Image (cartoon, rainbow, N blue to C red; front, top):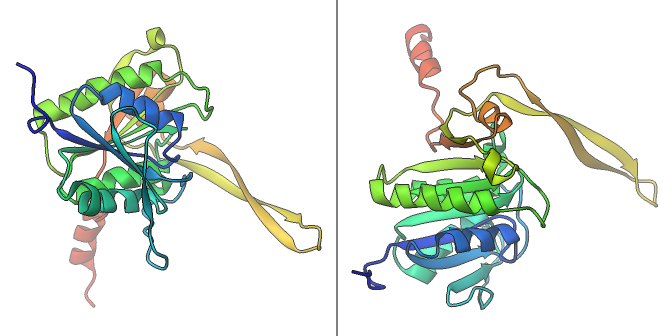
Length: 260
């Protein structure tokens, strides 16, 4: 028997690339048969915003009709703002699950700290809403999302079925290879890898200095259980992340050795 609209899970969809991004449309297409979809996404790209929230300016939100038969809103704020407003002003309740993405470009390793995509997912998890953030390792607006759609549907369906934990947040990255080359899904830890950054110094027409952030991605982690390794070997990586940043090992060490 088909589920009524009231019985369907409510699925909140957001992103950090903006409401018109192809990745968002592909995520909606991937899961639209799994529940009642509501989209609340930024009205412009918000990549690299991390867990920023808007506190010094008013937030605006307007309905958009870019998804056939699906309620959608564009918000002037950050991805985290979108989740907060969706719960409080659009849904007037917590959704059953929150999905963020599909991001154009990777969010593996240290990128999870800076990612607006994952910050939206983590914000949902803080509020007790299971969440998944999806990223495809292709920055192109013409990227092939075939595999990303397939695995998004598969993973969301599984999370809705299993009801693992209300604070669940999964960081999912999909390699940019044809569907037939993907080896499967691998649950991983976050690699110790980061950007060795540099600021390219230039002069503007008035002779004043300005800077462009540049850098090279470096993987310091030789483990075969990491998200970077999985992606390099054509696996979809799934990393469970958490918002408790406490280092419990060092906490125990300090409790034993510090006598202040």
